[in-house]
Image (cartoon, rainbow, N blue to C red):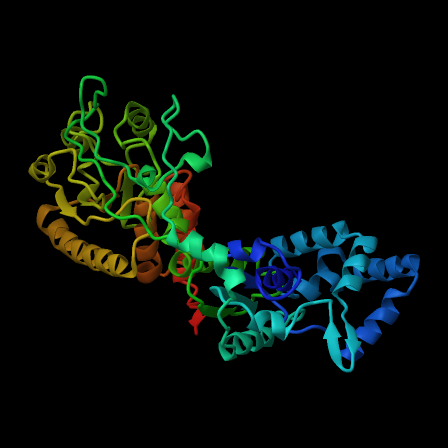
Length: 477
C-alpha cells in the first residue's frame, strides 16, 4: 500500500494535485502491488468489512493462535523464517488495531463504473505516468504481494513513453534546474553553517589544512585529503527502472527480516547513489562533510584510545591494527617490532595517504611492508577486493617459505591497517575470510568483531558486504 501511495504522490499528472511531485527525485517501492483489486475482489472485501467488529476481533485472535508460529505470522514471514523475524511480525500483528485496519481497507477499495476502477489503490495509470528513477523490490517467497507484481510494474514503466510536462507544469522546475545553488555560507562560532540554507557547494570541500601558529598540528608529516569534485545534484534525474527479486527466504517482511534487511539496505543505497546523486552516498558524506583532520587533537586522542592490535589472530590469517606513528611512544615501528614482530610478519597499509611512520624501521625488524592504498569512508570496490585477496595470497605463500627458512613458531599473521583498523580493514578481512576460508559473511563479520571489539562500525560497509555475497543484482531498463 505504501509503495502505491508513494507512486501516486510522485505522479505530477494525477490527483491529488499539489507541489509534492516536483520535489520527488526517485522512488523505492518494496513489495509493491501493480493494480487495484478486481471488481470481484472489491465486492467480496466489502462484504467482509461489514462483519461486526467484535466478530472480526474473534477471527483475528483465532488467526494469531500460536504466537510467533501462528498462521498470521507465517502469512507474512513464512514458516521457515528465523525466530527474530517471527517475533517482530507477531509484535506488529498484535499492535495492529482493527478499527484502523478496517478504515485503511475501505480506503483502498476502488469504485467500479463501467468496469473501470475509480479511487482506491493506484494501478497501471499511476505507475506508467512516473518519469523519475524507480527501484522495485520483491521477495521470491512473498505470498501477500507475489513477485509477479514487480514484473507487471516494470512492464508498465518500460512500456510507457511519458509526454513532456506542460509549460505550466514545468515552469518552476526549469528555473530550479537551471539556477545555480547560490546559498553563501555564514560561518558560526563553532565553524558550521547557521542553517541548512546557509550551506553552499564550497562547504562540501575539505581544503588542505596547513599547520600554522594558530592551528598547531600534532603530526605535520601527515598529508591531508582534499576534494576535487562534487557530485551533481539534479532536481529531475533521468528516468531509470531498476528491479530485483530477492531470493528465498525473502518474504513480504523482507524490510525487517534479518536475513534480507542488510542486502536490501545495500541495494537501495546503490540505487540512490547511482541513479539520483552521489551526494546520497554515506561514504561521500562522511569523507567530505567532515570538518576535522585525521590528526586534529580530538582525533589524535581518539586514535590513542584505540587498541593497537586485535586481541587475537582472525581466521588464522590476520591481525587488525591501527596505523603506526613514528613519533608515538607506544605504537611506533620500533615498538611494534619489539612487541609484535614475533607474530606479525607482514603489514598491509591500506590507508590512502603516505604513512606517518618509516616503513624501513619495520623492514629492519623483519616485518615486510606492503602499500595498498584505498579511500576512507567508502567501501572498497570489486577490483580493490580482488587485488587485496591476490596480495594476501602471495604474502601467505611467501610466509610459508620464510617460516621454514627462519624457523618461526606456529603462529604468524598478516597485519592490516587503515587509520583506526575497523571499517576498511574489517571489510577486506571479511572478504578474504569469505572467499578463501569458507566463512559465511555473517560469520566473518562476527569473528572480526570478536577480535576487534565493535567491529566494522559503518553500517554501509556491512550492507555492502551482504550485497556482495548475496549474489543479488538489480535489473535495469
